[in-house]
Image (tube, rainbow, N blue to C red):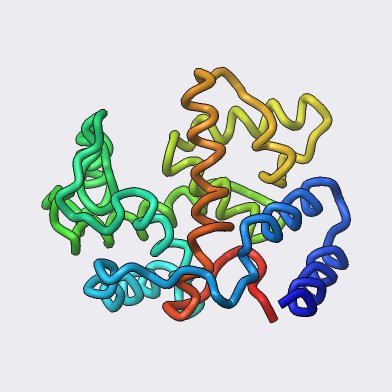
Length: 222
């Protein structure tokens, strides 16, 4: 395992030796993201696997980051289609009622507005992620997906404000880890901490266990 980790470390280091990328490497190593013995997908997820792969590829193409989206659903609801959060988020993808209503109006194929329907939730998640992705720029797919997930969790407007503030402070607005993630454009401390934890847990802790479902945005072991 150590030899494989060193090889992966060299790949990341050669691509970019900046502080943000080195921080990403450290997180990957500490969370065991390169460990082939990482936990496997829970049994509850298996019934949704094919539907997620199909929908992800419809919106993102054959190389869709399916593992990222599976990890996101894992984080959101633990694969429970009847989940309701303390603040009222609903279903597999944990959309707030106002967000699911907005999405149902924005995207005609989702006009049914059924957050407790697994099929609707999965379709809405892949399409909404794509909608955010198309509105953020980043240095690479890993950084861009982190920004996309931050937008899913807290709103695209906050991502844009954080990117602007990062640039004003001399940080790289095209990089999430160690740069945009380090600033707060005005959120409460609790909301800011939750938002920063969200993409890190999904991309670096949970996505590796879903690699057999499809690719992921951040570095994979060779």
